[in-house]
Image (cartoon, rainbow, N blue to C red; front, side, top):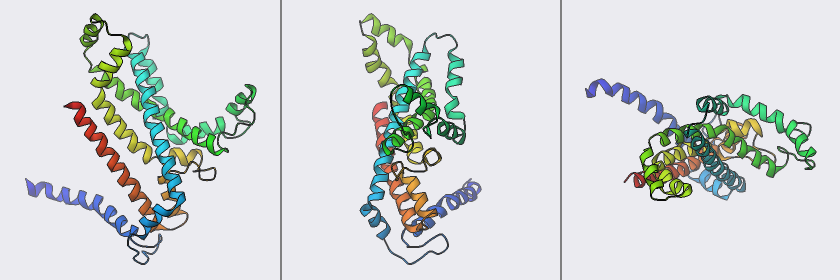
Length: 279
């Protein structure tokens, strides 16, 4: 039996392990896309900790991830709760609400660019009609960061809605009936029954969405390109620029490794939360 599966295991290890080892070697060298360059040890990692551009990208990645995870979760859970009852056409609503998630991000970002990119776009024109003069959604650094985060929530909440709906179907309705008999209010039922019972699924959805947000390149790059003035540059966008535009492969790969390390720590912490919730 071992001899039968050994070739597949070896092949998988080579396919997954070789790129990882090669990237690790690249992060220890000062090379480019064509040459490995001289060995520099951990200098690329030390350079990242001293680079203000790296820390600005790290701060935006944290903001983008926090808003993406908890914003999409709150909206997804809210819609799942609303559609859990006997709402006419609930299945049709769920299918329609999935559209932001299933539509290719290239199409979504193009639509959002058309909506907000210039002063003559529909949303800035509407904002001007409401008394907000010269609102630059993608040209102003603060507004660009807000717009990118809102866009991420918009394309991500359907996934959270599906996860929440699946978790809510596993909650026994008799628990709520018993709580109502005991005089529990709607808020008490939500905080003391719903949230604890769907906690394992919630933590799993947080882990997945955290990975999606941290590694999300197209959402940011297609909408703002990381601008203006680098205000919406996340770590993955920064790593791409350093490697493929500045041709500093070692430094770019080091940034990617640091990003991965933080992601692993966050995932382990959330996984332990799942285990505590299921005990």
